[in-house]
Length: 325
Image 1 (cartoon, rainbow, N blue to C red):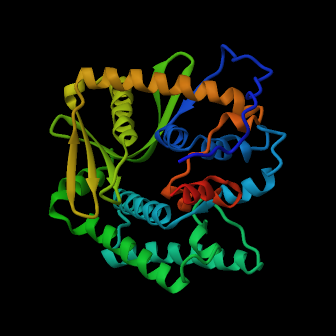
Image 2 (cartoon, rainbow, N blue to C red):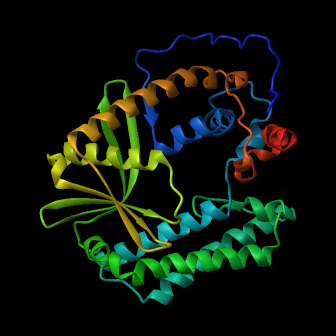
């Protein structure tokens, strides 16, 4: 496909040189955004920020769009939240039956749907960490009834999968231990000048092994999620003085009840650490341009995933994708 979003004039250089004290925050979502579409990376981490890219003409609209979610993100986040709620409730002797957790998840979906409809109709509303504006509802790309049915089925199926899948029994047992870590935010020690962060879905000790679990709401996956789990292993080794052979890294796929165990030898962990350092350097180089709002440095990569991007409204990438098909 031919085409570019900007002319052939040189990209302006940043006024400030890279600071030696710059600490780049790495996460799999951040590097994933940069690798999949640099323009989306700019919009999400610079264009909509008050203290960065101060010359961005679309800042106010970007701040509004940044809070958008879509059917994949909202179902996944609700399922993760409900699983975490159950495990924490059990640890506090407050757990309920399966139906309670399914209905709680469906209620959260309804709240976001209602907010999205109200904002679309100009009735106002306040999005927050849990209640988001749903892209498909706001733009009416699908009927509310159809959207709700699809997402309700997905949420109910995944929550029931967590509770009822026999292969997950040891995960449920491990997660309900008082000492288990649920939705634990961690800072991964990598190297001076680089900071990596993440949030562990579940971690627990069992049979002299330290399990780190990542819940997956679909059969599709990204390489960076494996890298993320290896990063969590680096954190656990540093935090608990463990050996690499004492750690079990697993992805639990809620849709089909399968569990994938990752290799976490010293060689795997070393390669993961080097990859995170390289990614962090890549991010830090782009931060120089992003902070100054030099949008030309961030290429738009048109693809079929543009339809899910919250910034689609003001980005030309989707148009280029369809023009080039």
